[in-house]
Length: 304
Picture 1 (cartoon, rainbow, N blue to C red):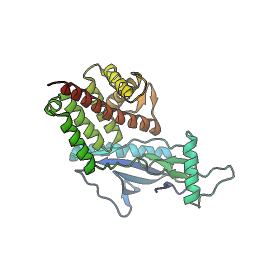
Picture 2: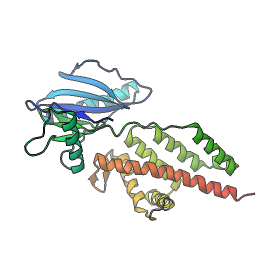
Picture 3: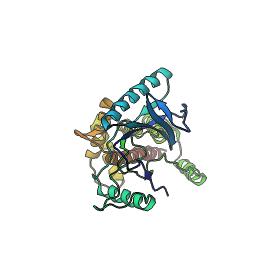
Picture 4: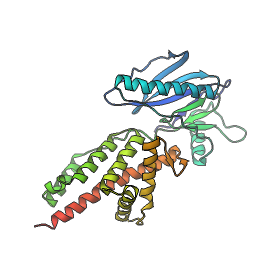
């Protein structure tokens, strides 16, 4: 079991490291460094981590100096992507989790105390000063104790086993006349976006793809239409018939598309809050496709 690890040294004079997460497509490659290298006068290293890469640059004398450098790196990557025709996306900086979530504090303190004895419990009962997720871009204060949480956001591997394939084919044969389903343009379009969303490791992009699934299934109506589709999914799942959840997800989608930010009704979403919405829209997109399949199958089965 992955228990996490110290993200900083947790001692010494005040100094900061820029930790940047960037992703590339399966068609692009990143030259990784077995050792550190010089980057515009600072020491840097690149490491591969699950479906993303981590660029660490330091040592900066202040957090502001580190943030300014991050701005240069992000703008440089935009130009590099456009110039080379490669997919390079650098995640924006997200503040370190301090004491906002007591459960996180308890988790990281316990892990640090157990697996990194160098950080002993202090007189006030604390072990760490903050925590970051493996997929989080941030400014790390090396002189503080910052714990890297366990990897809970890895690219999932889903097994398509032979028994499942057999059951699916037998079910399709039992329903009969599959061409009626395959002629439904909304079903095919929604299924295409669902597959793209399932394959996309970047959660902001896959969130938009799942939103597109719900929009296609709705047909029209924008947030109202998506609200109705989500309400139908909720009802089929034994929950209350509530259209507000879908409309809320659609508003997040709008902010992400038009302004590039994760925000809901004027409030920026934390990683935890966005993760909850992400898992929810992914589930709803799949449920929506299944519901349309069942409806088309029901209509088809009623025909001679």
